[in-house]
Amino acid sequence: CVFAMEEADKTAPSVTDRYYTRWYKTDMKGKPCEDHCILQHSNRICLITLAETHPILQNGRKIKNINYKISDGCSRLNNKVSGKSKRGGQFLTEFAPLCRITCTDNMEYTVFSCIRGRLLEVNEDILKHPDLLLEKPSTDGYIAVILPKLEESKSITNGLLTREQYEEVVSKRTSQQQEPC
Image (cartoon, rainbow, N blue to C red; front, side):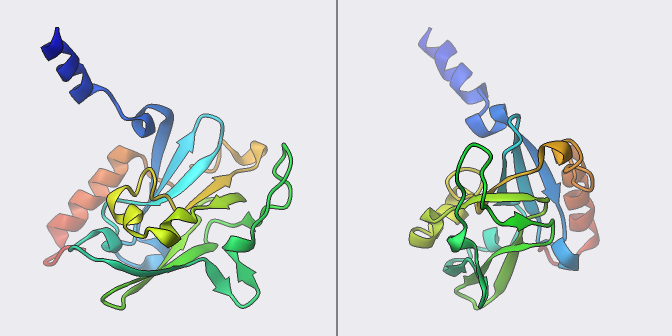
C-alpha cells in the first residue's frame, strides 16, 4: 500500500499542471531564446512567467536586480486594483514591458506581458528573493498576474504556442544552432 502511494505521488500532476494551461511566446520582440510562458487558469487569470529555455534560467545565471519601473512615469509597482471588476489596474498590450531583470553578468532582459489585459499584481516577493525566479519560475517565481477582458479571453491565445508547438520550436532551435540559448 505504501508503494502504491509513492507511485501515485510520482505521477500526480502538480497544482500548476492540473489547473493551468501553459501557453508560450517564443523569441519575444525578435530576441532569440527570450521565451515567455503564460499560465492560463480556467477563471481567465493568467500568470506571466519565464519559459524554461529563457536565458535567465540557463548556465547557472544569478539575478542582480529586478526592476518594475518601466520609465520615469510608469512603475508596475504603483499598480492598484480595487473592487470585484478590478478597477484601476494598468491596461497592458501584448508587448507592454512588465519588468527588467539584470543578471550578475550584466545581461539585461525585459519581460513582456505577452497578452492584452488588466495588470492585477506584480510579484513583489521576487524583489526580496530573486532566487524564486530561478528556482520556481512557474509557481512562486511568477512575474505578474494579468486578467484579460472577458470578451477577449478566448482569443488571447491566438499567436501563442501550445506546449507541443513550443517543444517543436525548441527542438528545431537546438538542432539548427551551434551554441545553445
